[in-house]
Amino acid sequence: MKYLITIYFLLMVWVGKGQEILVNVDVGDAIPPTALMGIQNHPTGKLDLVKASQEKLIILDFWATWCGACLAGMPKLDTLMREFNKELEVILVTKEVQGYVDQVFRKRRELEAYIPQLPIYYGDTVLNRLFLHNTIPTYVWLKNGKVIGITEEVTKKAVELAIEGREIGLRMKVEKSYEKLDKTKETLLQFLYKHSAPSSEVFRTYSFWTGYIDRLGPTGGFWHQLSIEGEVVRFTGTNFAMENLYRTAFGRASTYINDAAVEITSKSPFFVSRDLSGMEYEDWLVKYGLNYEVVVEPGKDIFEKMQSDVIQAFPEIHARIVPTLDTCLVLEIFNNNPDKKWKVEDGGFAQVDVNGSQTLEAEMISLMIKFEHMIFYRSKYPIVDNTGYLGKVNLVLNGRLQSVSDVNRELEPYGLRLTKKTATYQKLLLEDSPM
Image 1 (cartoon, rainbow, N blue to C red):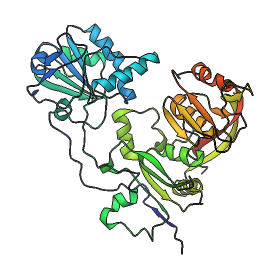
Image 2: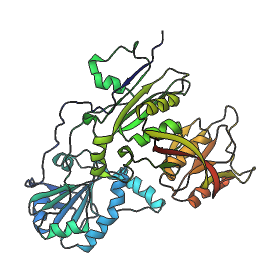
Image 3: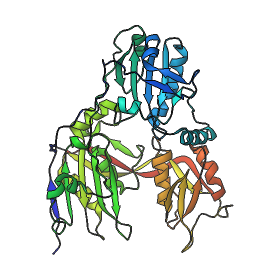
């Protein structure tokens, strides 16, 4: 006998154990005696934090090469350090070793991307233990022998206030310890129940919701489990925005990844996260974040189940697909005898590789997903495939890919190009249901 058990914990907050505040050295505390040696891009290569903070404002910038927000904030720090060169010293602090960072920087230099010129402390094993944090960037402000701030941003006004010996006027970060759910090894249901999880013989197929789960923290996300046949049979989303659930359910995890083809007219507070970031986003997520898991048997359409669930759970929201004529980025074939063959015959090697991010057994939809997720994530133009080809493909795109012309440079040998033109695309419209 097959079971289909749908459990709705609608908008309930799963109450877990209280989270331990991660505090070692906190705002207002004295700086422990700490000497840094081997600082790169630094006049002497060494720094006594207590002594240096008596002479200048010191800002420790905790970062990593994979953190886009960290890299995006560094040009401002470069500018501030030049402007306040006698009163301010910024030290970039990373756990990563110099050899690895140098490789990343070489790649960025080839792409003509920004490379920080600030002092860098590589392979840190000390400061990350003194100033505990879950998220980066994290900025630690040191002045006159004390920690005067731990923030997620740096502003010119705050630097001026700190130099004057006044409060910096920025919100302080409060970090907590969180439990980790490895979605590849454990379902959300198993995580919540732990040793008292119901038998998998009973719960073979199910779906359920909860509100924000505090013990998982704000760094959630979602994951798809595939069957042997390559079908999606489990979706697990933790502490994420409801908009992303609608995108996945109605886009079948292959479109509506970027913002261009999604229009939200609903006034629901569940759809206000786009313009929020950092701690403001975390505040919103605690109130309106969701957890959702669905498991189906192989052969069943998981995305139809997801659509049914959101319609039943949130009747006040109306989701519909609307054919829309507007300016799009349209992928077309302009040369049927290209220098590089990209259509894969039966049994041939199929891949889409974009700067090392590889999808095997790839079809054209794989390239469109790469476009939406990696290159045109913030594009204001929907992306439309007008090639008419449904088979396997072999496409490799490398180098600087930050514009349509960059992408077309890599597509040209394959006889493909993206053209900005009027076309029909399928818009996902999220609106308030009629009363």
